Image (cartoon, rainbow, N blue to C red):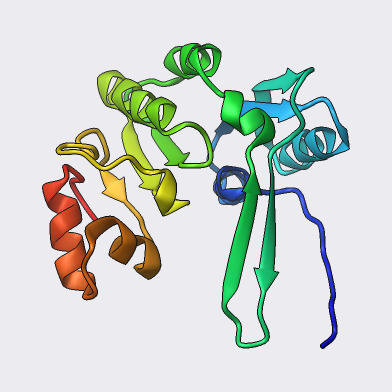
Length: 186
């Protein structure tokens, strides 16, 4: 078995921000990286694509978050996540987000930061009149409860995440369950 590796700056949020900027949207990233080469690379990459990085905090104590994707010969994958600075995203970032959002903004969220912060960011987006998009990945980070997605306009799970979050094995049944957890659109 041949083993190859590739290292890239990224993460779901960073990748989505880059894509939005490439499509011409004024894009800002709110988050946290470590004071290490990975953090510097991510900030430089985001800037190179026109993503605003003024609201990316550099954590002097924690390393940058990292995910290792292991792809099997059959194409299936496993992802090992080390949260690093992502795990420390909190009130400071929520304050920056609150100052940034305005009616008509689009807020794109993922679950690679603490889920209570994801929920508070979604509430902030709703309060500010933004459209809230949530990629509920990794699904195991989502804390399910009634109304958990009340502040989410568009919940965008992949098939596996939809099944994991809903307990269903049919995409339509899964979407129905997720809609009943508060999401406006799945």
